[in-house]
Image (cartoon, rainbow, N blue to C red; front, side, top):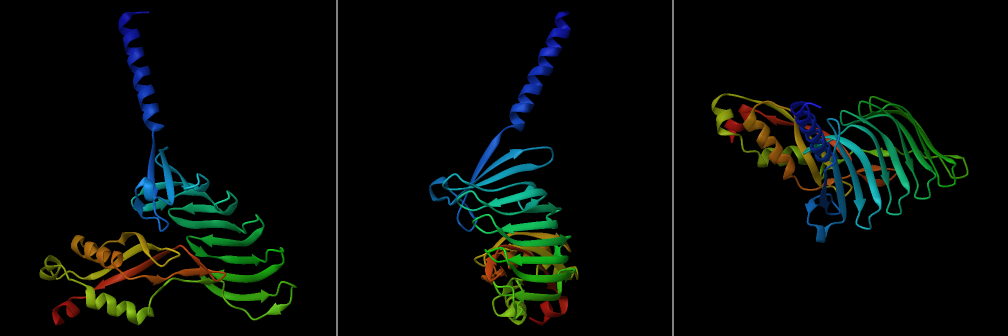
Length: 274
């Protein structure tokens, strides 16, 4: 083989090997029970991250080294989900599975009791409950049936563990700012600091912030979903990240981690009246 060709071949092989090794690099991140980053010594969870094809392949583990979640992200900061996800309890039993498309639940999601039996079957369209939802008792008897359209409950029925009709109550409750909408508006009005540059330029509008309300009511993974102006975006993000705890969302009376979206209004008339 010509020496020059041989050297080129070796160089290409070496470059390919290096790229392959880099793509296989696995990073480890440690988290508290509320999923705030921490040190290894204080970790309740830890995360293994590997770069894939335009995706981050992620596996989360409990501190006892049992798999807690596996799925793929398009972004880590903020966390944006894409593809099929599975969640497990501390004994390694599958408790939830389903697909995300562009960070929104899509299609059929299945939830299981710790013994592996079906708890719920839900259907989603662009992140909203859509169509039929069924919930089951641990003895496999039907517990509830609900019908949704664009995330809104149309009708529902509840049953006793023996199959008899009983008083209906909605299985899903959205997260709520403590004190409700009135308290949320007061918090925003009392704490907003209208950016000077936006005020001088007469810029106003609604900045939409997307974030997660954890099962403990904490705010996580907040980011600007719809922008207005850089300084207004930054102020809206500050207001959300510094909010007091919310009342968490619930499913079957159990607190759940829920992704939420709210507009943060900036009005020149209100800013000038202060």
